[in-house]
Image (cartoon, rainbow, N blue to C red):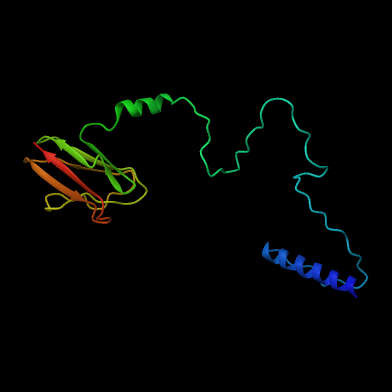
Length: 170
C-alpha cells in the first residue's frame, strides 16, 4: 500500500511540474509500472564535477551577479578621459534621468542654448514665465532656445515639475 501511495505521489508531482512547464502530463500509471529512482545532481553534465585546476585563480562566472562592488580596478578608456576633460560643451544642458545638467547656466544674448534629452523618459523645457516652451522632448532629441533679452529665466519640466533649472542671460 505504501509503495502504491509513493507511485501515485510521484505521478502527481511529475504532472504538476510538467504542467508548469507547459508540457502535457503522461497518462495515469498502471499497477504494472515499476518505480525508477530519481537522481538529483548539481553537476551540469553526467559524471560528476570537473577536476580542480592548479593554474591561477578561478575564472569568474559572468552569469552570476554579485550584490557588492569588486576590488578590481581598471584604467579609464580614452573615451572616458575625453569625456572628463571635455565635460558638457558651453551652452549645452543635458536632461539626464530626472534632472537638468547643469541645473544653472549663464549665457549671452543671441547665443543658442541647447537641451538634449539623454534620459529614458520624455521631458519638456518650460519657462516659468512662459517665455519659451519646448513641448515634449523625446529621448535623444534636442530643443534649442536663443534668448533675445537679458534676464534670469527659471524653467521646469511640465511632465515632472520637480525638475527645475535656471538660465541667466547677460
